[in-house]
Amino acid sequence: MAATEEEWVDLSFFQTLFDQASDGYIVLDHLLKVRYLNQTAKNWFGSPAKINDLTCSHLIKCEQIGHENHESKCLGCTALLKRSSFCSEQLNVRRKDGKAFPVSISYSYIPWHHHESFVLMSMRDITLQKKIEQERITTDALHYTVEERERIARDLHDTVAQDLAYVSLRIKQLRREWVHTALVPYQTVADEMTEINQVIDRSIKELRNSLYDLNFELETDFFEFIREHAIQLELRSGIKTEVEIDDAGMPWVDPVEVQMARMVKEVLTNIHKHSRAHHVKLWFKRTTRSMNIVITDDGIGFQPSVVQEDPRHYGIKSIMERCRILGGVAQVESQPGKGATWTFEIPAHYELKPNILHNTFNSSSNL
Image (tube, one colour):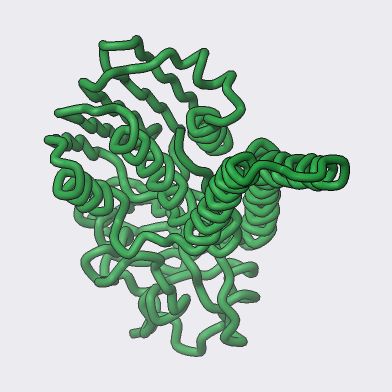
């Protein structure tokens, strides 16, 4: 149907306002039929010959991110029904050449005379903004990678490297004794070799643990992993395990959830090996802003400051460091005979891309 003279006068109002604007503007009538495109929108989507026969979805061929049902999620329909305006959702739309690009789009309800109404779609190309955001995400991810590499280097220096240096020193001492002593007692040699074998076995175990954790991935979501691991701990150790989860947020990106899973796993492994606990409680609360974790056991306890200073026990330091790399804060409170409480607070991670951080994190061992 051709537009009447009165309707063209109405549309000239929009032409005056928007024709030379750098953003794209599209005016829709009460049936969501396209009535007007400014020059920018025409450059993006073309100039259809029969403009009144098109709806907005036909024109921009939008690919709404995360929307399974376009009709029920269309904010243009909602703006008309509720006679309201909605600001800034991000969509991928297609140019006339078929290439997709991201836009920030707002819908404004405009009442008109004779009970007619319009919806004004205003669109801003955010390609450059997305590029800058992706560069920032990559920079953040590289920061995590560098931090983790430094942590791995420190852990290897404190464990495997020192163990191997000790073994090398003991073997050299034994060789000097053999050279300068006509007869070295068998028991002396046997004791030395037993100790050396123990150190080597420990180093091999640490390296195997590191290799295993390098390939560790969550086959389920984070909380499902926690539930399954708690059940396994109870079956293996007989320790009664209680899990309480308050999840008001949404899943975080895989590499961060993998890091948190490793962190919790290390704490539970330490409890299993050293605490002699009868009961463990794990409490999790995730909001849109952070994750709070509290793990409490009724075991024999320990002196955190003493254990952290002992070069043979680097588990606490490793756990704290892992939390710090995620931007979080970790604390352990314990006294001999009074159990232990681990507390973690980690800020939300939604933007980091999984493929950037994947497999960059290593794990350490236990107390």
